[in-house]
Length: 352
Image 1 (tube, rainbow, N blue to C red):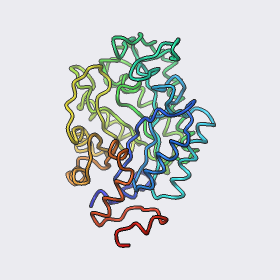
Image 2: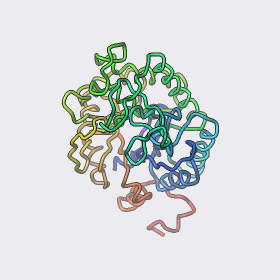
Image 3: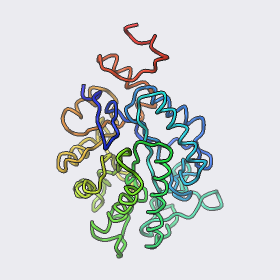
Image 4: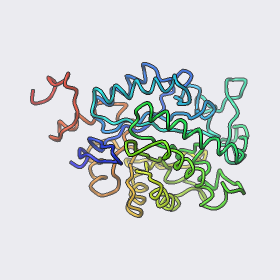
C-alpha cells in the first residue's frame, strides 16, 4: 500500500504517509509541555505514525489562542519540547515536528469567547481593525515595525525548535489565525505593502518562510498549513492558494498542508468524509508541490485512494488518532504491511 511507503522531504524520511495532525490540547501551564503532552505524543509515535505534529505553539505569549496553549519563546518551554522529541527519536521510528503560530484577532480566548483583560485576557492584534466575532473587541492594527518584529519571533521559535531536535517545522497560515488574516481580503484591508494586492497580502507569510529558512538546513523540513477556502464571497479561495503554492515552491517549502475555513465567523461549511481533499488535489496537481490532505479521513481505504489518485502525498489524521493511537500499526497488521511496533510489544503481533 502506498500509505505505508516511505517519503522524503529534504533529508527527513518518513517511514509511512500517516501524520498526526496538530491538535490543540489546551493543557499547558505558561506555555510549557507537561506529562500529559509527553504521554499524548509518545503514544501516537509508538502507534506507528510516520510523523507526529506537535500542536499549534505560540511564538510569543500574546500569540496564543488561550493561556493554556503551548509556547516556544523561552528555555523552559524548549526543554519540555525536547523531552518529547528525544523520546520519539530514541524509542520509535516516527519523525516529529511542531506547528508555529500566532492567533492574531482570535487570541485571548477561552471556550470560544474572547476574554477581557479583567478576565485574564490580553490585547489582540490583527492586520486590520476587524474583529472575528461581533462580540469581540476591535483588534489593534499591527504597524509595519510590529510585523517585522513578529517575523523575527517566528524565526526565534523556529531556531528553538531546531535546537529541540524537531524534524519538521510547520507555519500555521490557516484557520483564521494571524497569517491567514493577512492572506484574506476579508480580514486584511490595509493600504500599505502588507495589504491590497495578492502580492502584498502574502508578503508576511513569505517573510516568515524566508526567515525560518535561515535557521534550518537540509535536516529539517518546512511545511505550511493553509485554508483552502474562507467559504465566503470575496475571501481567500483555492485559486489564490494555487498562486501562493507556486510562490512557496520557489521558497524551499516542502509541503502544503491543506485544511480550510476558520477566518469568517458563521461561514457555512458542509462536512462529509474527506471534504477538504479537493483543495489538496488542486494545489498538488496544478503546481506539483507536495501536499497533505486532512479532514474527516477515518479509514485506510479512503487514505489509500487519496494517495493513489495523486490527490495528496501525506494523510493528516486528527480525531481518528485521538480515538485510536494505534491506528497505523493495527491497520498494517490487517493489510500485511510493515509498520513500527515497539519491540517490548512483540508478543502482541498477530503472527505470535
